[in-house]
Image (cartoon, rainbow, N blue to C red; front, side, top):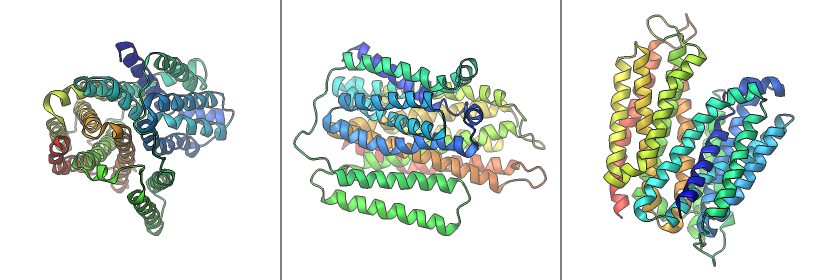
Amino acid sequence: MGGPAIGALGVLALALGTLQTVVDPARPMLERELGIDSAGAALIVSTLLITGAIVAPIAGKLGDRYGGKRVLLVLMALVSAGGAVSSLAPNLPVLLVGQMLQGAMVGALPLSFILVRKHLPPGQTQVAIGVVSALFTAGGAIGTLIAGPLAEGLSWNWIFAAPTIVIVAATAVVSRLMPNDPPSEQDTAIDWLGVALLSATLLALMLGLLMVTDGSMPPLAVGGVVAVVAALAAAWVAVERRAVSPMVELRMLAAPAMWSASVLTVAIAAISAMLQTVIPKMFGVAGDGYGFGLSTTEIGLLMMPATIAGVVAGSVGGLAVQRYGARVVVTASVVVTAGALLALALLHDASWQLVVVRALAAFAGSLATTALLASTAVAVAAADTGIATSLLVVVRLVGAVLGGQIAGSVLAAGIDPASGEPAESAFVTGFVVAGLVAVLSLLVVRHLKKGAEA
């Protein structure tokens, strides 16, 4: 596979990342134009998130079975159709249909990893995975930046139409230049019952997390959600144990390389989501002796170094794994993150301190995430590359939701009755909790090298 084919995959990842994030800055305009409230605007993002969590493992498994290129082209057709529907949507229900189709984009990453592993020499695989992941992250930053100018200069419809045009063009190039990858297994049937149960489990999990994060559910209802998710997961495991060709090989999940990568991915995503909640809030609060009272524009500018750091780290993460190994890279990343967060709990009286720590954490987190994806992609059997990496994508979504909920709960519990804003102690608690999550994750890192060697 030559440079142009890899370049096309990179452009596709960039456009997909852009399409994933354009809604956030445009929420106020969408509320006005479509006549919806904040809950309706949040539902737009949630729909894409839930669909992506369901589609990713299915796409990865089908890519392993039938070939990454074939399944990627089908997914990109769905995403392109979703972009067109979203850009022409006259109301919220139609827009939600478009977002549901666009959610298929989450499956593009594991499919790209399948193609990279099948068509590149082993020494280049991890580097290419890091570059593709970094470009997806960079696309997210671009989406945040261009959403406002597109919506205000043209119309809100173009925040969906412009990235979709790029996706269609990049997909055409991939179709033409990317060699076909042969199916891994041609004679075994798809475990459709396993597919259905895994989809139901993920749907219940994501819906449950979104409802719990709303904060209005009574404890009994939360217990009911947990029971439903546990029952579906148990049924899925029972089916997979008996299936001739299971959706997910349970022995693969039990391997140290896989379960340790999953736990670490959840922890890293949770830390990132916690900081994404706590630090902007501290920038905006004007408390007595803490906070900075900054505007939304100023906060956005101060958060940009973290976005840039994440993109840079993702692009070099694969190279770092190739040179030093996943265990060393992840250990260093976690130690830096923990140290920076615990230091921030003590020193946070200047805005530059928050900017530096957020950038350090973003660099370390992106480096570790890329290392985990790259190491997992080559630690499992070639026929399991798609399903293994797609499961990491899903657990990253779960970790992000959990982290956001933890941070929100910490800040809500520390509201100062006099000001109605979180007290300084609430922010300190948030930094300490995030740091402790990083410290505790070190207990899992030691399993990475053992799993990779096995």
